[in-house]
Length: 279
Image (tube, rainbow, N blue to C red; front, side, top):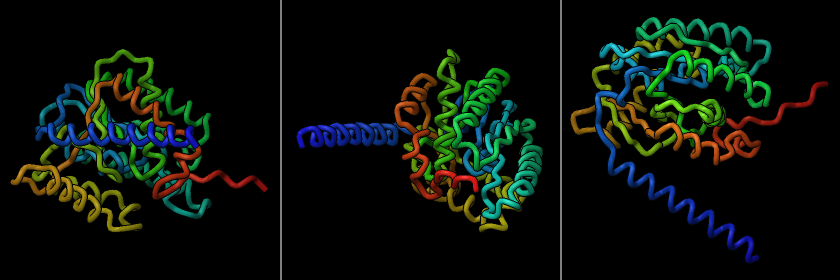
């Protein structure tokens, strides 16, 4: 019992430290035109994530003449249940991702096209890390945008882990900005995207595959309005928020959390379950 009590005490102490960090970050948050950068790389787990999370901020970078590059790790095929439909969905979502990049005025996206339902496999993860290392070397970003490590979607968390692996041996001086989608990261930076919301909304409509599944545009509007009410300046009606860390701190923080473990992948709103054995 003493061992169990000690483990519980350590877990409680870690939780208290985490909450302290969240509070300190929240109190020190800054409203900025965009997180400081001269070159930007945005990493999406799925097609559409780079719009939903940091899309308004991407528009502000483009308007300021700051180059924005995007890459997408999976092909997003698993949003349809029928396996016979997944290859078709992957092709459709790739076309949508390219169309949205053109609409926003960002660079042609790098589509790794790793089947979404295979990313939990170690070999596919190694493939993604190698591709991420290449993308980082090519883009040479000083601001890197990724999902928050506690996002509800396990593949969002896993991609965060894979990015940390890709950065592990790097000495690049960059800031990692974790965006909010299915999570509440403590905001280091708050970006007012009120003026950009109409264009972000129009871009969201180009993801017709997602709009057919749910009211995707309404989801984009709700998140932007919620972040404005919770964290933004009084005049803002739409905001995006980012938890920012230096590269080394991000790597150490994320890799300590076992986000690639079976337990982590099985948790959350859309758990990644073990594959059924072939028959």
